Amino acid sequence: MTTPSSLLVILLFILSTACSNEKAVVVEKSSQKLSEDNVFKEYESALDKAKGVEQTILDSADARKREMKEQGY
Image 1 (cartoon, rainbow, N blue to C red):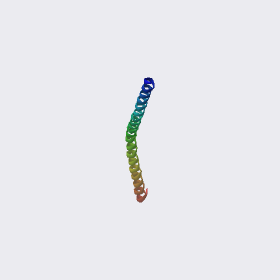
Image 2 (cartoon, one colour):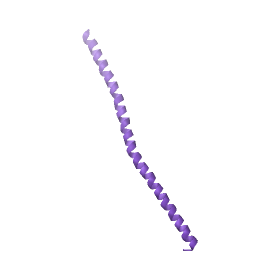
Image 3 (cartoon, one colour):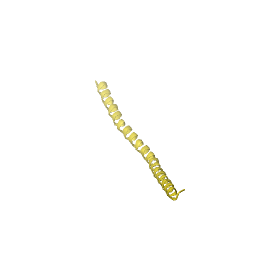
Image 4 (cartoon, rainbow, N blue to C red):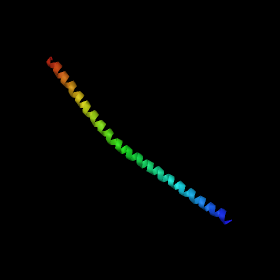
């Protein structure tokens, strides 16, 4: 009788440790995703700045064309 009860205790121990490891894996994956998001966030901010510079250049070119048109060139 001690063998089945010992097996039951061992089985419950294995199942309890297996369930606790799943939480650790989920936490690890979410922290990995956060670090990837931070890396791409820097690239996105650089792209946004570049778009702002591009818009400034386009506005300046349009203003220059208007001035030249007003002067008759």
